[in-house]
Image 1 (tube, rainbow, N blue to C red):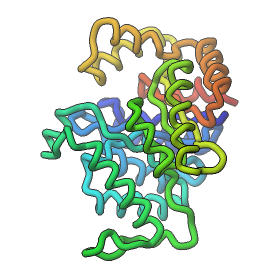
Image 2 (tube, rainbow, N blue to C red):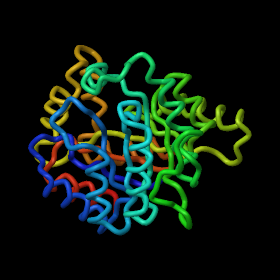
Image 3 (cartoon, rainbow, N blue to C red):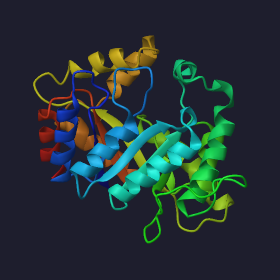
Image 4 (cartoon, rainbow, N blue to C red):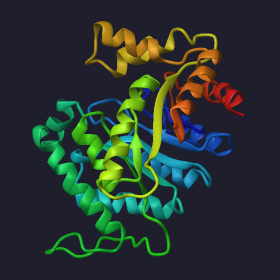
Length: 288
């Protein structure tokens, strides 16, 4: 199982120099990818712009959106932006997409929240067509840059509803799991495999998971502070469960990696609850 690391772009105190320093250090090893999560109404850097900067600052690691809320974005512009990152990075983009759950993000973009699933279906079809050189629609032609001579971005589907997971077999290369317990993720992945087989796909979909981590002298403090700042819409037992799921000791990180690998995970993206580069360095020692 490969281990990736999240960039601290959702930490308001982490400026661009910090984020790109993380990307360069991750590129030096031992991580397989750098990832980024997505919000609109939050003091964070925009996901695709940040990954474009990370692409120019690295040469080896894959660039993973974990995930972006595609229905918030113009489909044609999304196709062009992702093709551009794929070209800039020489084929290293893994695009994780989902419908999103924060209605206020859609209000800010003046997009209909309750039709986001249907919108995503149309976007996935368009992305696949544009990335392979096809016309955007019957009325509009191709969108560059051309990806001739290289593979299109890897496409991963996130979300846990049956409808979301059914998109894996139709459009995607794999499934992107949210930060949940391994046994929960294994059950959802089974649905992704069913979708894969129902659509006549060979092999099996790639499984990429996510989990939060915290290390160092203040490891016990970071999870609650991060969850309370970023996940403002959850409270009570759900908040406590999310905080408790953070891998906050070297022993829990090792155990977590073993458990995720035991369910057949191909790659685990570990997301930081603190932005200081010490977090990356301590995690790197465990991964090597």
